[in-house]
Amino acid sequence: MAVRRPGFTYEDYRRLPEDGYRYEILDGELVREPAPRPLHQIVVKNLLLLLDGAASRESLGIVLCAPLDVILSDENLVQPDIVFIPRGRWATITDENVRGAPTLVVEVLSPSSRNRDRVRKLRIYERFGVQEYWIVDPEKRCVERMVLTDQGYGAPSVLFAGDVLTTPLLPELAIDIRQVFQNPLTY
Image 1 (cartoon, one colour):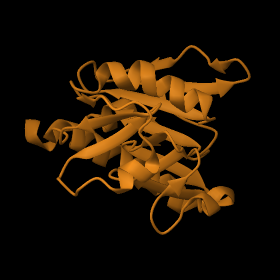
Image 2 (cartoon, one colour):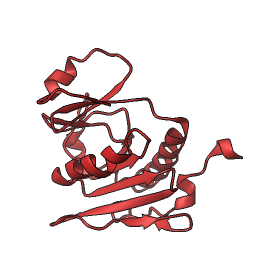
Image 3 (cartoon, rainbow, N blue to C red):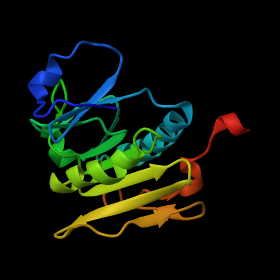
Image 4 (cartoon, rainbow, N blue to C red):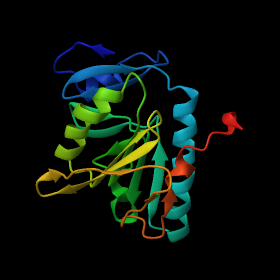
């Protein structure tokens, strides 16, 4: 749900009351997010554990999850579901937030965020230099992996059950897409 207030900034955000909602600022517009659904959180947990295992095992960086303020600019504050920040970029992590683009951002689609994650946030992540952007679709049970080039994000690699997700950011990582969507509630 967008709350129309053009020119909304990080300072405005800091003055918001603690009301239990998650907010983002996208190109100066305040956007309120409803709480994620259980399936969304199950998928986030699965990916978080898989990514964190690889990052920790290799001591390559840190994996964090929402709610977490990631400040890309004064008028762009996002709360990605999962971020990966390599060791050499830990200076972007402060006591309060992350200041600067993570190297990897993962967004798990929800009914309320589907279009925003696919279009608006994709453009923002591209503009601010997020090297890899993964869009995870629990409905279609697929992961789209986009890699930043000099021309922006290239065509996504779309991975389904049986495919293996890898990234040069975490060389030891090899995720069978079925692992992403394992749901203990369906057994």
